[in-house]
Amino acid sequence: MYYGLDSVTLRNGEPAQLGVVLGPDSSDRARHLRELLAHKGPIWQWQIEQSLTKEQAGAESRFYILSKAGRPFANVMVVERRGIGIFGHVYTRPEERRNGAADIIIGCLADDFRQRGGRALYLGTGFDSPAYRLYAKHGFRSVEPESGHMAWFAGGRETFERDAFAPAAVRHEPLAFHHWPLLPALAMMAHPARVRIATMDAVNSASTEGGALPVLMAMNGEAEHGKEHGARAHVAVSEGSGVPVAIACAMPEHYFWEQVDVVDLFCAPEFEAELRPLLATLELGLERAAICYADLFWPAKQDVLRACGFERAVLLKRHLRSHGKVHDVELWTRG
Image (cartoon, rainbow, N blue to C red; front, side, top):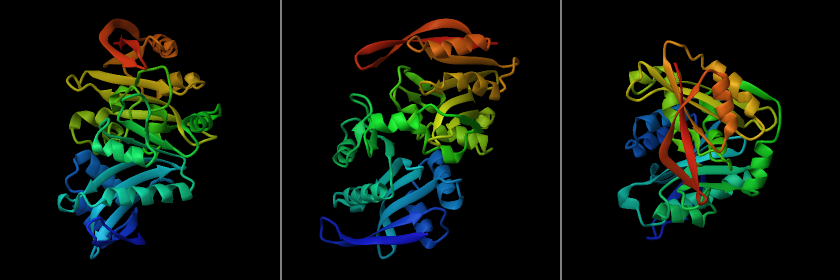
């Protein structure tokens, strides 16, 4: 569905129409939007198709676009659930750049998100890049010093994370697309662990925006590479906030995918008891080896791995720095 928002004037004096494509949508606007974003890679094309063609259990996809004569030339996307979302696909056609298109769209998107009760948005970009400075202008802030992973919170990060990760009963679910916009809240939260969800590129406070998509594709039988069909992941979802508070994930290792799984375990504080039952859902067989990274600064994860048959193998020498501290990481193995 498309709905217009406003007529605007670009810096060069040309008029344009500001509007939103709300997925799922099968109209010409959606077709033109696909053409605008056709340069995106395979995982992003899969995500765009999920957003434009399928209802997603409460997750909503909004593509804020600027158009001329019905043809979009600039876009910013938000996929959200429960007032929490991923902000991405910021793109303007090269011939339309330097006329303030992205600035106009982001300003409108931010106002609309707030008015609809939005609580948190997450993104990833290059630190101190032109895009970074544009997002900072609209209220996004680095989640760690000198990080391009940024977030915006309606009432501050501490308040949001206290509410999202408050102690509550949980339910365990296979990871699905409707968890995708919520997962950065867990991966980017304030936490002592540096290795969060390595299979999803979440090391330090980093977004799962891109890294979760290959796992989701594999779990849907649509992996880009056949070796990824063994991926599986489960989350513990808070009955109070609806946010994933813990995750277990297994992904075939990049080079030895027929023999080795890389395993991830991560949770918010006070939810460590969910790690062991989540790990059991992965059904790690003894016929395959499994490896897992664990921070020395987070012993709860080490305790779970030890209880589930993993053994400490080696202390890795690639230290992870955060807030001026050096964090050592161990490799644990099983099988």
